Length: 307
Image 1 (cartoon, rainbow, N blue to C red):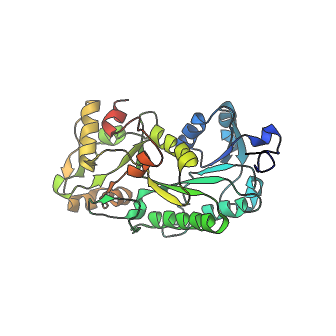
Image 2 (image 1 turned 90 degrees about the horizontal axis):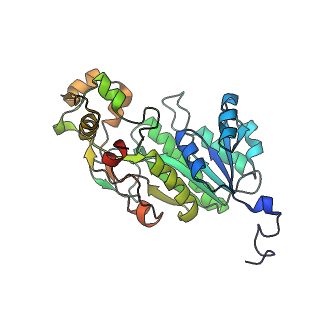
Image 3 (image 1 turned 60 degrees about the vertical axis):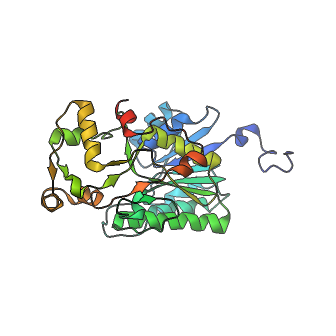
């Protein structure tokens, strides 16, 4: 395209390179940054000054700001050509069903030229309990927890921006993230504690994605993702939760967890664990493979846990 027709063509070279802003730059965000080409300028929002040396050591430009203090986000306006939004909604009010962090971010981004693309990391929890059925992205959301309602709200805000301002928004619905080099990224700690799993008759299907494959999915969504599109970012694993723990126990040489009835689980396990044990679904990942062109490095948890 001639420079007089290309919106970036007439700018100095330093402004033509891709500028990626990562919101919520934790473990997965750092993996995303590590996969970006060296010529890309990578920026990350952080509310902690202690993380500044870490970011700089990884060639990431730290931007001090807090999604919970919206006025301080004005500096983000117009900075990035692409945004990867991985920040979860706040959890200080367990009954809240909206995401003020996403609202604050979008308000800041709209102050100047909007990004060319935005990728959002949502959760597969927005589907609710599907009773073990296979779930495609066209299934209507049915959030059963306040946590899932907040994600539905964030998705709605982002899709509204996409429709009203023409920004290509791509939403990844993410299940359980795991990786042996991720803090708390395997069931080992749970197995060492002897935390029980549900009996086979009451067990639920669970879904997974290796952190490295998720980072690759974020980049693929930026590059190949269709505008205003949703993709299940899940691997090929087809296991119930207890079988997943059994597999991990066998790989680690640890005792398999005891199996208990759902009635006993309600008495013994924390509410947060029970919430994950109350929803059963199997995520269809054909869009991930066909539209985002992802060839999974770890197709199942069997390969990923052996890493």
